[in-house]
Image 1 (cartoon, one colour):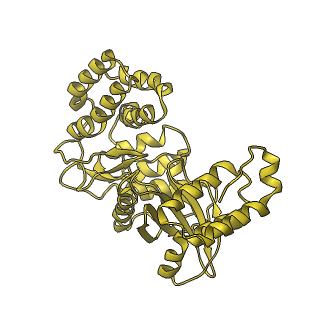
Image 2 (cartoon, one colour; image 1 turned 90 degrees about the vertical axis):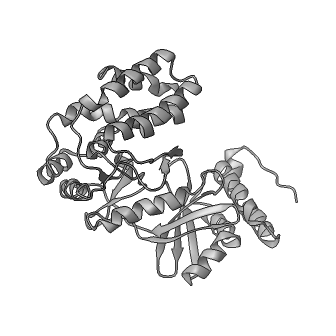
Image 3 (cartoon, one colour; image 1 turned 120 degrees about the vertical axis):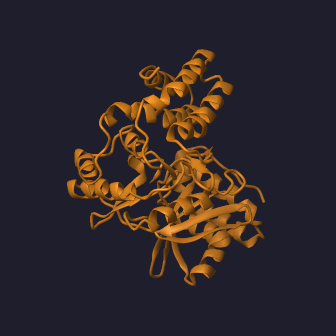
Amino acid sequence: MVLVYSSNLSARVLLPWSICAIIQKLRMCSIEPQKYCFYLSFFERHFTSLRMISPIFVAMLNSILANYIKRRLNSDITDVKPVSGGSINRTYLIETLDHKYFIKLNNKTRYPEMFEAEARGLNLIAQTNTIKTPEIILQDSVGDESFFLLEWIKTRRPTAKASAKLGEQLAAMHRNFADKFGLDTDNYMGSLHQSNKKHNTWAEFFSEQRLQPMVKMAIDKGLLTTNDLVAFEHLYKKLPGLFDEELPTLIHGDLWGGNYIIDLDEQPYLIDPAVSYGNREFDLAMTTLFGGFSNEFYVAYNEAYPLIKGWQQRMDLWNLYPLLVHLNLFGAGYAGQVRDCLLQYV
């Protein structure tokens, strides 16, 4: 079988029938599960009118992965639509006769146990009974394809009431403590492995499990210099004197504005966690990095669980970690911001 592809946009839009014909031919073939990822990625990459060709994704999904999901859900899949969901995974809305679901897909060897780690994080948050998380429906693999199926939540823009509730509930979540900083298992920050080896102090944990691995990676990539390394070595020594230690508390770990949603009833949900037991200021710091959190959020949090004096001056300190992650993921454009934050504390 020969696939002929034209890069002309009008050809892509005007000939959906030919694409459907190709899909039908693929369905008639005995496609191995590991081929699913390639074919789906190809059509996502090259055919931009996704809404117009939604039936293609239904056919593609039904032919491989959806048959397994259908058996597990005991319900027919009626539609599959691509939706936004970050840059790491392929994400879709799956509709059955009576429910809607959100699914993430990725090659299981590319990011080993990423969805397992995310499921553990969502479960840890849910077990606190303080703030909502999406219900986990299925987490499994078919061939080389790993997937994570969650309930579909209809969302709305945050209101002042919802923002205050988010602050209040996050404060309640932060009252769940552990004996040590870290976690029993490792997980991911974005697409980078995140070590959670346990330590007795936040200063040790933040230096050894957060900053040092990211600094080494950036040095190895040529994104930071030996002068930067010396500055970070100074910071590691000074860190215990820059803040007051608190008990290790459950933190979301990646709390930027894209990792919470508000449902139609103005209830907040946390999504995409990178959990550990850490310093709660770390979560607050990340909320300031890219915006998306209102004043009502901070007021409600501080009323529910007052922060230690001077917390605002430590936001750039804790944000060194996510900035280093972005430096390693997206390149030298973040180096200046890393250095600006670092020089405030050395």
